[in-house]
Length: 303
Image (tube, rainbow, N blue to C red; front, side):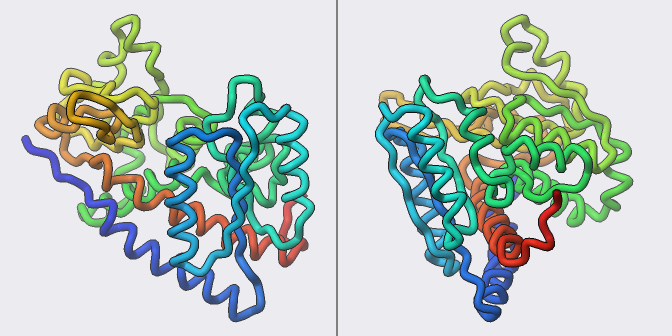
């Protein structure tokens, strides 16, 4: 078996049109979308991501403000900077870039972002609303993974409900911004669900879990963690990982899945790059448009 390679870029073009239409509609009603990105320190990955988001925002007509904070700033300084953005009516949405320096409590920073500007969906209020099935903002990466899966199901000619009701989804990784939201999205679709992380590979149990999956979503942040031995034939594999790996040939970007190995066993597989990634930035800006609409009409805000 050779896997069908799912073209995320093609799916992203349709999503781009939808997001552009939302932003244009808001502009015609006098509502400006403005995204603020916050970066503490100068991590290369965070810097690359910020530039990519800024470019996509500019292309779609979303205003962007970048706030750079010194790596040695105190936790209080970081929270104060975010609070100022919360209080600024010109800012629709806030994205805190990772990783944060070791002395900064990530959970404290996430709590400090206004829940109605938290377009990454990591504030406890937004994660709670997602868990209750009434999401305000969904993690762009998790939402993008399921958007790709939904599109693939539609193209396969199977009813979505039938597919999910008959499927076991195994999520590898339990991060607050990808793994846990992905689990909740699987539950919303009434699929059977199992959750593991990279610790299962350390005790030799990872394959026992992953080989049972009908759909395998890998978001562990471990380069090429999943090999052919971890996947049974016919599985749909969504690789969410983006890892910069340095070797003799220089730096290359790889996913959490060994593409060459797994391609020989999976039914369908997302590549890295070109799979989930092209949709993630667009979903972030879709959330930004939703936040702009929400902040323009406070009556919509759930309390």
